[in-house]
Length: 300
Image 1 (cartoon, rainbow, N blue to C red):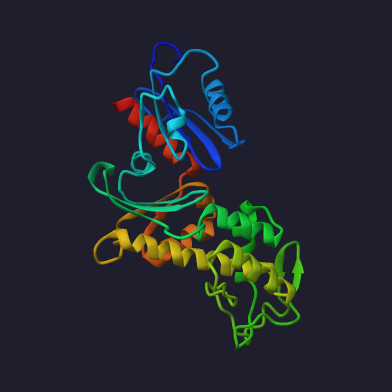
Image 2: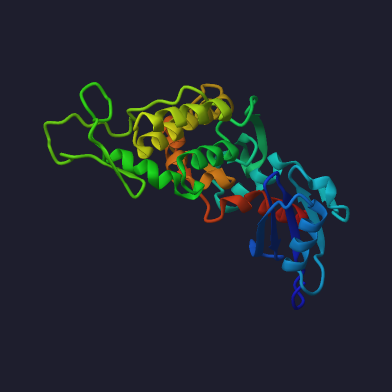
């Protein structure tokens, strides 16, 4: 607590990161915290508390995430579904769908009036389309996961043959595909349709597929684009099942992306395009669950 204003702490104890948000009495986040999970959740939670409250204590604490039951002094524990819904609605009141691309799962949450969750779906198999999947694929390509989207954007500038295959003379420079004759208008050009497809969404088999493509000289940018499109297709299919009975989100509706995977701008755009909707990515998408839990702490 600072001054006379009460402060409320929301903790999101995830599978890969610990997040914390402090909310004041009248507004949103006033401080935040995010750090990787060390393997010792008790120590991770203590560090988050010390960072966010070097002095004083929160008026109330609400915990969410996989490890929420480990926050022993929490006033309440709340599901991730409810917290992501509350956090997304706070930032984007017209949101009707939230897609959380977390470290170990993907959740699509349909919102009603006031941000009330009406329905949700989670990925039902392995790590397909999750942050973990993106991490593994980025390592296979030898780039930080945060650069995967930019790497894939390089594929858009790469011309392809009539058959849709990358020309044999493609050069790789600084991780991006540089295709000779790029300005030649007679060459076929495919924008938004990657010339390479990844058929496996299991992280283990997809990694093998990526290594095989690399061994055949396929540009990293084309592989990255294909990986993102494959993940986007799976996420969009999941989201369409909860969007509304017709399976489509009206254009005037807003889909909000949360979780670390939302930092992959190309992935979010591709999912949004497939759903034919407007999409929003918060400045700190990893903190939406913690923000939602802080808001719950303020209101209980």
